[in-house]
Length: 283
Image (cartoon, rainbow, N blue to C red; front, top):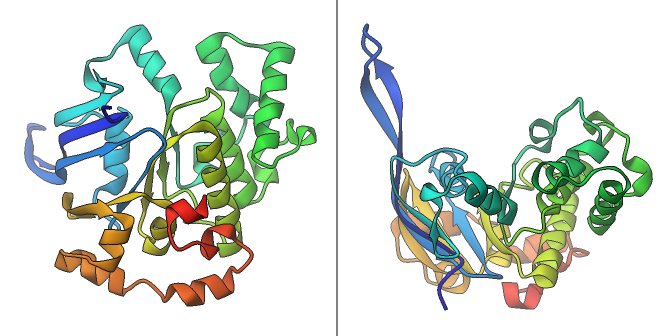
């Protein structure tokens, strides 16, 4: 059985200097020859320090930015070749949860419209039917129907991230890129959101790319892990292999910097995600 997502040789650079005629004279390479796969129902963690190219990889996979070269296949089709209806179909099946829910949600749009807009754009669903679907998905992520007509400024960071997750789930996708989805949240709220992602994966068979600089989160969530350093993949393996027997010096330094998991479990003892030793037990 072929993977749901196959990424081969992604390369991306951005111009950093131009001459007086506007021609690019210098470029900075952000990702270089990045390759990996993601199976249905699997979580692939992508880790590395800030500036490693993690978020750029996620955006290239979803064609939010175009790679300079490389191949992204989703369900056997080259995403870079898609257009028109085929590209819209891909957008329905592949979504993204951004790091900052305050900036990813329109401050002038009610939650009713923010979550319901994809249903209108992709399926033409409006009115009562759209509201019914919006309420269903909001309740699934722990929000209430009486919050439909509130604006983003009226919610906490944890609530906004739940709303962002609801928006990503509205079209019933098969795959979601989670770009540092809990980085701005308190530890107790992080656990709630992460447990929600685990529950949704179990219910829907979702595949995730989970981008994070926090290896303690990735250790509990991911089945496999990709380690990036200065735009390149330096190590890939199962979560157990990578954390128990890291091979690359950079990976070793990352793992050594992770706090003792026993301390983390004591501070968030009520979170199911922190009581598990591996992703399978967390489920």
